[in-house]
Image (cartoon, rainbow, N blue to C red; front, side, top):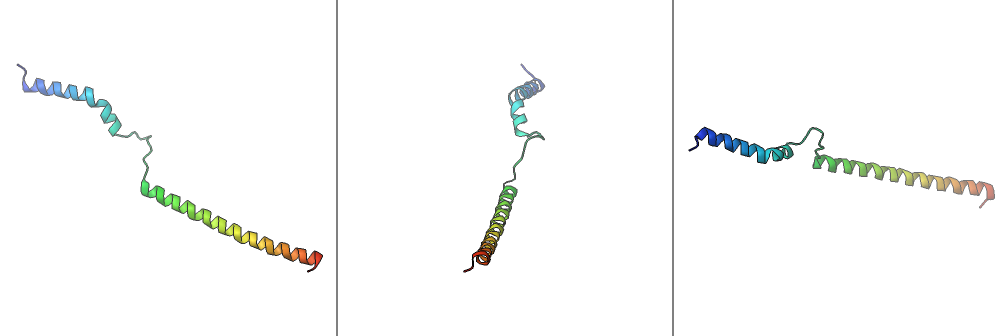
Length: 79
């Protein structure tokens, strides 16, 4: 008959042999990338606002160029 110590030692060995890989998967490496959902959403929203500002400024620039082009045409060819 086995003693309590022998049974506990066998259980520990069995645990280590079967769950050793699982423990590795449960504890991420330092090289693994952890994604923060809230931070990512914030970053995407910020990028979206920046792009919208660029488009607005380009629209203003386009309108200004159209006005200057019309004025130049009027100076050269008259109305």
